[in-house]
Length: 167
Image 1 (cartoon, helix red, strand yellow):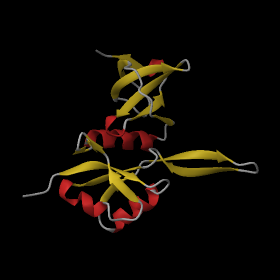
Image 2 (cartoon, rainbow, N blue to C red):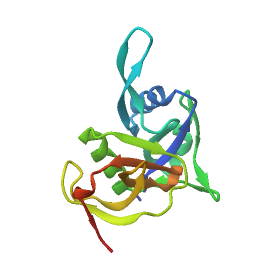
Image 3 (cartoon, one colour):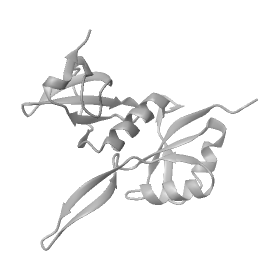
């Protein structure tokens, strides 16, 4: 019998996401740590840095039977649970996150409970073909990708002309 693999959500020690991902990869575990580029301003200079999209989270592709093994690396804290069940995210959600990161579009992460927006499809640009919802925030349109397993949402600014309302 083959083990069923899922993308489980691991919570890490603060600022340990990269190290945990490296250590898991060294053990042969498939890991996904979405990283974004940010420009940091110091008093004397600006610098581009790579930072995790979701602070404190690493996605681990493993079986339920092998979760304990993954927690043995330094910096790993726990796997996220809801109602006693280990939380995991669908492959489609991982694919969407990867696609957004790869396009290099500017992404915001929001942990607030965002009200449901209009159902839309993106008609043009690097995210063409994605379906989801759109909200207005600070007088701009944002496409929302919800990640319920970690109670976070990704917001991407998409001009209204690239959106088609669907029902």
